[in-house]
Image (cartoon, rainbow over all chains, first blue to last red; front, side):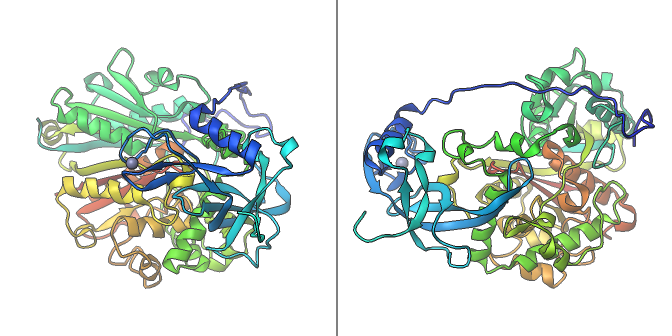
Amino acid sequence: MAITEKITNTMKPTFWEGHIPVNYVYTYGHAGEKFFRAIKDKGTFLATYCSACDISYVPPKIYCDRCFTKLDRYIDVGTRGFIETFTVSFMNMDGSRKERPRILAMIRIVGTDGGLIHYIEGIGPDEIALGMPVQAVFKPKGKRTGAIDDIIGFGPVTRGRK
Amino acid sequence: MTERVAIVGIGTTGFRPITPDVSYRELIFEAARKAYTDAGIEPSEIDGFITAAEDFLEGYSIADEYCPDQIGAVLKPTHTVPGDFLQAMATGFMMVKTGAFRTVAVEAHSKASNMKNISELIGFAMDPIYNRPLRETPHAISALEMTRYLFETCTTPDQCAQVVSKNMGNAMHNPYAAFGAEIESGDVLNSEPVSLPLHRLDIAQHADGAVVVVLADEATARALTDVPIWVEGIGWCTDTPTLEMRDWGEAAYARLAADMAYRMAGITNPVAEIDFAEICDEYSYKELQHMEALRFCMPGEAAHLLETGVTAIDGELPINVSGGALGVGHLFEASGAHKILELVEQLRGEAGTRQIPDVAVGLAQTWRGVPTATGAVAILSNL
Ligand SMILES: [Zn+2]
């Protein structure tokens, strides 16, 4: 297929190796800041709600992507959800095997149309099922920074807490 | 407005796991030279040029500025579409439809072997605030979708593995394909788990290669060739990028893209009116999920069509006779281009040992890959 066959020694291919040093900050915006502040300060999740479409957004957005109206109604939707889907993840980004497989899940937050993608903790791969109720487990309040990793994962529902 | 748009020329390098002897621009030059020879036209006679490319995959900022030379487009109207080839072809189709361009060349390529950390590169496409900090691979996101699809449709991992067996087997008959193999579904299920239910062999491997297509209006097409391949319909669609708000079982982007293409082509009963299809199988389950989205069957019925041989090369609706992405290789933005290549060869009767007899209408469908929910569909005919 090549136009010219230039390489005779496969151990010495001809190339220049480059890399792209790119650094960004990603601003949370109004909705993101409210969402992460609620996690950090109160250990709970906020949704925005569109009454015209009867859709609630987790993570919250300041607009409804169906009817395109601006949303400013934030609702505390608690920390419980259902396992919408899950996977047992064996591979790291660099292609190496994880030391221990992790269960990654999409958790639909109760009473909302959204949710979060996060780890399942305290439930084994053989015990897990779609539709299973789970509840967010947070880092201790003093260690939270207002980021997605303030959530350790989602685990079995315990009595009492919402 | 011109009535019909045809493909009058096509050229490719074929697809290989690595191409250390050539630069990506040399790959493209080879495909372009072949396409223009096939069309019987010189690039100086072509009115417009489009490349499908995305900066981060190319390793350039403003990669479009590096596109003109190798397709003969220096000092000509040219631009880049950062999407799948089918989206770029849709743009070329519209340019010809305006009547302002008699001919347009559309190019797409993959130089995946130049990318040293593909998972990181694709992972960079995920939401930086909600998803990226988890450091999970793009395959894990697909595995989430696969689990939900299997659950909603009562499909099994073994049935998905049979897609791999069919497509890698088909690729044995395709001289362009990089990953032809005779394997059983058990081999797939016994390959290493990547992110269950996905195993290593459920996932298409990347390949290098380029494809160039020449589009023309009807009068120009009839003057250039005896076998114009007509673009009867084309459609595209994108769902929300917010993974958390998506429907995880159904490929709505493919359903709506297909509906747009069907409307344009006047197709009301796809399974009766389409003779064969090349559809996205970047992950094994995707072929089945996309068959349902394309309305080839009801949700949950795709695996049955596969198991009863309907989608085999000698079946009533052959799917991925080329070998698909699983057999040919995953080509990033050139994915749609390889599907159009197969459609054109089949509709011209030039597909060699994998030729399907008496085909008149073919469908190509692509998905832009994790974490996108972008799909495109094109319908071609030789009538
Ligand atoms: Zn709304």
